[in-house]
Image 1 (cartoon, rainbow, N blue to C red):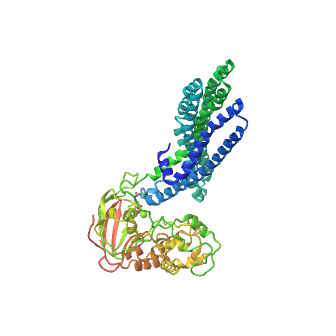
Image 2 (cartoon, rainbow, N blue to C red):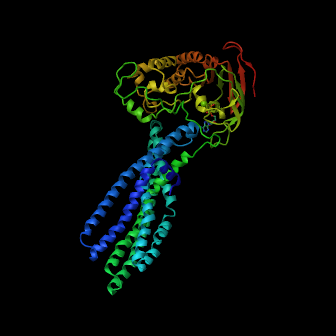
Image 3 (cartoon, helix red, strand yellow):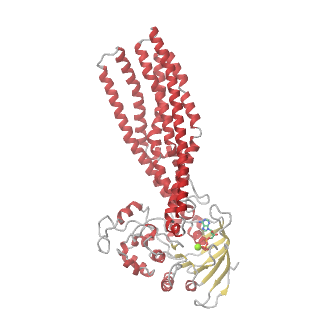
Length: 607
Ligand code: ADP
Ligand code: MG
C-alpha cells in the first residue's frame, strides 16, 4: 500500500475512507449470513419464511454497495483535489529556477490525467484489500466450526493465490512505471511541439515532429500492451488457482455426501462458502493491476512534493512572477470600476478558474532602500557543473543606480536571481543591511522589490490585472498611471476592451515590445518597492519607446536602489555605476562621479 497516499487520505478524507472500507467489509461478511440462510432453506432445515430474511440480506448488500460507490467517488475526488492543490502550491514554492528544470508538459500530464488514474486504486483496490483481510478469515472460521476437512483444504490452498499473484506481479511495478513514464513523455513532447508549431512549420520540420510523436505514442502503446499482458496473465493464473482449489474442496464434499458421511446442510454451506474465501483475493489481484498506474502517478506526485531545496527549507512563492492577482472585478457580471460595460469575454470565468485566493496581505514594504552586499558569492544552477557566478564581491549602497553590462551568458540574470532568492549561493553570502538573505523572510524581501524579468510572463487575465500583479489592491487610475509611465497606455487603450482585454494564452495577441511594456508597468505599479531589478527592460523596444522608458525609469529610480541589466547606451547612461560581468566574474566596476556621459573613472571593487 502507498504510505504517503494513505497518510494523505487519513489527513483529508478519513470519514469517507472509513465508510468505503466499512461498507465493503460489512457487505463481505453479509455473504456468510446469506450462504447460511440459503443452505438452511435449500436443505429444508429452515422454514420457507426465512427466504424473506434472505431477501433482506441481499437488499442490505445492495445498499452497502451503493454506499461504497457514492463514498468511493467522494473519497477519490477529495484525495485528488487535495493532491492537485498541494502540487500547484508546490510549483509556486519551487520558484522559477528549480521549476524550469522540469518539463511543463510532464507536470501537466501528472496533475491532469496522471492523478485521474488514482481512481481504480482508491475506489477498487483499497476496498478490495480491506475485504481480503477480513472475509477469507471469517469464512475459514465458519468452515472450521462446521466441517474440519474442507476447512483444512481451504486453509492449505488459500495462500497459493497471493503467492502466485505476487510471482506474476513481481515486475508489474517496473512495467507500469515504464507505461506512466511513456505517457508523461508523450504529454511533454506534445506540448512542446504544439507550442513550437509556427517555428517547426517555418523550418519545414513539422512533418518530422509528427514522426517523432508517432514513435513516442508507439512506445506508450507497447508499454500499455506489456502491462495488459502481465495483467491478463495474472488474472489467468489466479482464476486457475482458485478453480483447482475449489475442485479440491467440492469433490470430497460430494463424495462424502453420497457416502452419507455428511449432512446436506453442511455440504451446501461448504459449497456456498468456499468460493467466497477465494473471491476477495482474486478480486484484489485483478484490481491491483488496474490500480498500478495510479500508484506510479502518486509516486511521481509525491516526488515533486518532496523535492525540497536542500540549501533552503522552504522557498516562498515567487509572488512577483508566479502568483496571480486576485480578481479585481468583485463578481461576474458586475460593471468594472470605471463604469464601462463588462465586455462579453470569458475573462471572469477564466480568472476564477485560474486564480487562487490570495493567502495574505502584501506585507508593508520598508520604504528605505537597503545596503546590499555580496561576499564571495559563487552560484551554480541545479544540475550544472560550472558555476554561473564565481566569487563575486560587491557592495551596492542605498539609492545607487547600477547598470550590469557584459556579453550574454555572463551571469547578469543570475545575479538578479540570487538577489530575489530564486537561487541560493553555493558559497559566500548576500547581506541586506547586514542580515543574511537566507535569514530574511523572502515574501517580505520580495515585497520591497519591483522586478521585470528578461522574458516576462503575462497571465491569461485582463491587462489591468496583469499590471496590478504586485499590488492587487491598486485601483484602475493607478494602473492607468503605471501604464502611462511605461508608455503602454496608447496601445492598451487601442485594444478591443482596453484595460479589460483578456491577454491571450501565452500573450499571443500582443507583440514582444507590448508585453515588455506591460511587464514594466507592473514595476511602475509598485510604488512602495525600494529596489528596482530590471533585466534588459528595453531590449525589445524601438528607439522612441526606449527613450521614453529610459526617462520613466530614471524617475522611478529616484530615491530607490536600481539594478538594471542593460545593453543600450541610453539605459547605461542612466546609471551612476557600471559593472561589467564576464564569464561569471566582475571584470570592471566603474563609478561615474559626475553627471551621466562624463568620463568614467575606474574605482572600487575592480577584480
Ligand atoms: P546573462 O543574463 O548574463 O546573459 P545568465 O545569468 O542568464 O546570463 O546565465 C549565466 C550562465 O548560467 C549561462 O552559462 C547560462 O547557460 C547559465 N544558466 C542560466 N540560467 C540557467 C538555468 N535556469 N539553469 C541552468 N543554467 C542556467
Ligand atoms: Mg540575462
